Image (cartoon, rainbow, N blue to C red):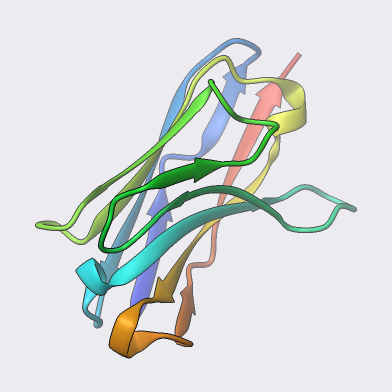
Length: 120
């Protein structure tokens, strides 16, 4: 059974730090590009960060460049999002997404998300 389970969300003050984790199971994690998305109330879903398989190349949305860092641990089927210098506008539900590469191209899996709230 495929699962993506996010954790690490919570309430933090402006300027604070949070580290999100997403643990995967049920599929060949190293062969999937991993994305973090977020969706704030009343807004469209936004791609925050991507770490590609197999290159490990990282890309970030303009709103988080220089503040967020995505990383992955293929030995433990986990992707992380380190979030620094948090702002109230970072408040959203953060979800991880697995996007198949190579032979798994076209396959997508989603987690249920974890809520991040940044107080001003």
